Amino acid sequence: MTTISKVTRKRPRSFSQESQGEPTFKVQRVFLPDRMNQPIKQEMNPYELIKRIVKSQGMDLVIHESLALEGFFAEYTEEEVNAYDAEVLTAIRTQDIEKLREFHANGRPLKCSNKFGESLLHLACRRGFLEVATFLIKEAKVTVRIRDDYGRTILHDAAWASVPDFELIELILKECPDLLYMKDRRGHTPISYARQSHWVAWN
Image 1: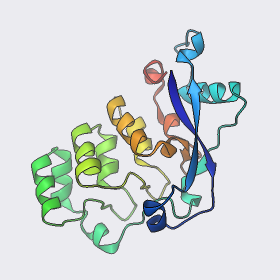
Image 2 (image 1 turned 90 degrees about the horizontal axis):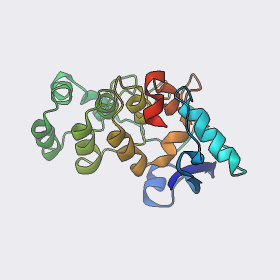
Image 3 (image 1 turned 135 degrees about the horizontal axis):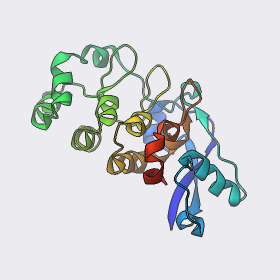
């Protein structure tokens, strides 16, 4: 038996308040029967599958526009934007964990991004760098509640990868299942970016 989370909106709080208290979102568990005891067709869009399962249990799937949410996503400081440079990008692209660990030990911000809000964690997830993403999230304590200026979360990037890493996707969802229900400026959820050739794996 698998589970997903259905999200309902509560009163917005600041990011600092949220990180110390109850989450901004109230999560309700929805039980997903294994493939609904039916064979899943290869061409079934996984997002449509989730909607069908939730609807079968008498509920609606609530999707939130990430750019419209207040207090849920972390903002970037000027220091964090300035820390996004060629040196740290090289460490990400070469998956140099020891170099990243050195940066972290020296107090260098790793929750950093370019001026468009594209962070190191976005890059690691887009390229399917599981070890790098695990280091950033678990050891460097980089929050997964970040978005770029187009409203894409790190889960959007993980789903968009040429070959999705489901261990990475599971890591992200364990940290924040609410990210599954965020849509970007185009109205796309993370699963909407799943390539049709990967639908069977998603299902």
